[in-house]
Image: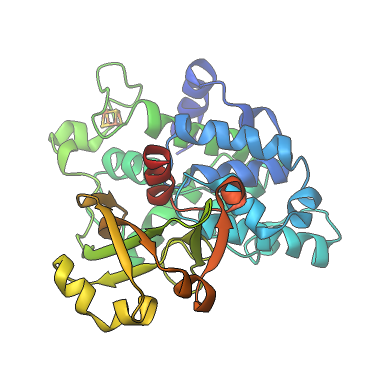
Amino acid sequence: MKEIAHKLISWYQHNKRDLPWRNTQDPYKIWLSEIILQQTRVEQGMPYYLHFIEKYPTVLDLAKAPEEEVLRSWQGLGYYSRARNLHFAAKEVVAIYKGQFPNTYEEIIKLKGIGEYTAAAIASFAFKEPKAVVDGNVFRLLSRLFNINTAINTGAGKKEFTLLANQLIDQSKPDLFNQAIMEFGAMQCKPKPICDTCPFQSICLAFEMQNIDTLPVKLNKLKIKERYFHYFHIEHDGGIYLNRRIEKDIWQHLYEMPLIESTSEMTEEQIMQSDAWKNIFADAKITIHHISDNLKHILTHQRIFAKFWKLSIGPEWHQNQALYQYVKDDELKIFPLPRLIELYFQKNT
Ligand code: SF4
């Protein structure tokens, strides 16, 4: 076991990428980078990390910022619950820990939005606590090195791999070990691994048994949900209407245009005859200028098909409607928007 840790650290010291969050022991910056990099590629996450560090240099600065501003800074990165939790946890650090980031795994994991992986990363990188990180890269490397067939997205799998990673960790250099094992999975034991130059080739059981391609095992539990969105771009006197999403759903607390949603495709006539249409427009006189093609927007568990209707409506509707917030075009930039809406505006305004 010690041999593996030693080789990983040595490999890391010769091959690591120079990433800005690796040159700090500030738990706040480490936390930011870890949250930003969840489900996000390094190249995509980097500008967001740099922007956050500049705009909110300390946890106190982040805690003081309005939530809408934080969401706006996050715009385009997706999985907005990460930003909401980040902001909430920053306020917890200020309220409970007087602005000092907690310094043990047990305390860190109590913060909102911080799971086992992130708590282990912060505790080991910032405070050298020997807690192993287990992310997708670690699952992949360990499953191959030890030829483990337990599915990684099951409770049993998480337990088995976490135990193994904690047996492997270098107790005196847990920060380096954790960085090394993740980097090795990201750079060498990739989905298509580079076995030719791998320092573990002689002991890798999957390599010996030639079943690298089947590992790690993952149960296919994901059911993709299809949703059909009809958005109404209602232009009026140099502005449009927006609605804040409040339900526990995708894009919570972000803004969008008035929407009719369905679980199957509906024709334009069906939309105009629906109760949802009457709820929004009542008997208002409507001129439809344009209806876009279906735009496909893919999220992890959902496939969204969106159509954008460009409309103008008679004056009574504007005086009487109470459902939506009227926003002047030049104020639009302060509202956090889902990427789908942002892209639409980029192409259509
Ligand atoms: Fe991964 Fe190949 Fe190295 Fe095995 S030999 S650990 S599969 S890179």
